[in-house]
Image 1 (tube, one colour):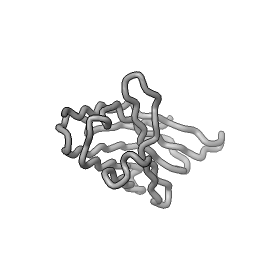
Image 2: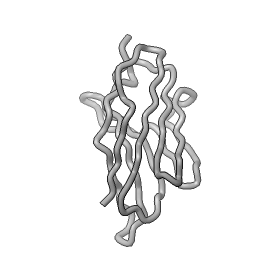
Image 3: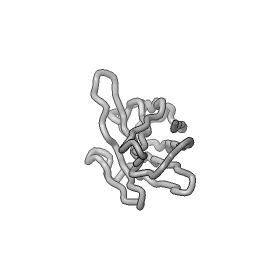
Length: 119
């Protein structure tokens, strides 16, 4: 089994910054990619940022230029540096890992961490 533990959420004012961390552990075979998703109340979960095993990042348009995803491959840890935060960024942020296992591609989720941006 694979466990993902997120940390770093909290309450911040508009324009502020937060850094989220996600550490993966357990029986990981081969990481395809890791990503951050978020879900606001009443909304669907959306992909925010993703980073491949070879370090290529990608972002949803709404966070480009403000958020930066990075990965420590040796530790299977990803970070999400969030700057210039807006009220619309308020959501529960989830970490996801996709693993290429003998059973095929398996996705694992963290428990989520709340980010609240006050105006």
